[in-house]
Image 1 (cartoon, rainbow, N blue to C red):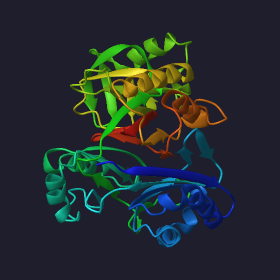
Image 2: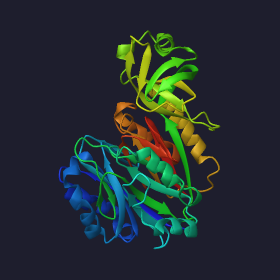
Image 3: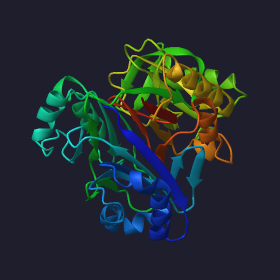
Length: 373
């Protein structure tokens, strides 16, 4: 299946005027596509309920997905803390994709025809958006991944200082939504980390819920204090926003790990509190936010994702952490310009969210890049 992909973006104080300029940038062919992506900065979130109808009216495209982010991205461009919209459209056959939305943890409210379509269409890939306020989000992602024998999803969690919302053929909140693609849509996708490990892996020898009591058979706080001493003697109460916990992904042959916040210390019990449940964790590492290591990892990811790609990609989606972008790489859209410098100019859209999704896993401080081939 060969589909044409178009993208455009615009900023401005009035979101309707920004939409108009973005649609002008798409051109007539871009407005004749069947599927659209729309990401807006949270400055526009107060007008969210009107957005789906405006998208259809301005374009004539019936099917749209998207969400709100603290920032949005486009080819070589980032918008943070400023009103902006990033659009991408794909000219796909009518039966080449399906929009979905669900709020129930077991996906019991998902369209019952979706799984049959996934199997019939040979779907192996989709884009998903999640509401960070839904307490069942991780189980929902696992259930999505298991549909019809396994679908690989990429995406991110909405981020907003106002109203979290999604677009899924209409206004949607408090669940997961997105699009599944038929087998004719070819992609390659990779993930890049924004933190670098400190020291070595430690065995989790005693943990309950989010509390770690022992690592390697020793008090967890003692092990942590030794590790952070190696990076300049940061005291435990100074760890917020700099030192994190990395949980190795079981079965990964690339050393993949998910990063979770280290949210507190308990000196009386020599314990640590982590922003996740650790009952099944076997090992962990400590890690730190590191701009230099993050740029090196991003460049390595860009090398890997372009290996074996015979022709230039036709488009891309990028989902990055709100702690990345200017907060990690600096100003002047550096993160997106690094990507553009390695893969070339192409239609691209995405946003900076409260978490990133690759397969059924929820990551933090990462960037997930997918190229449409």
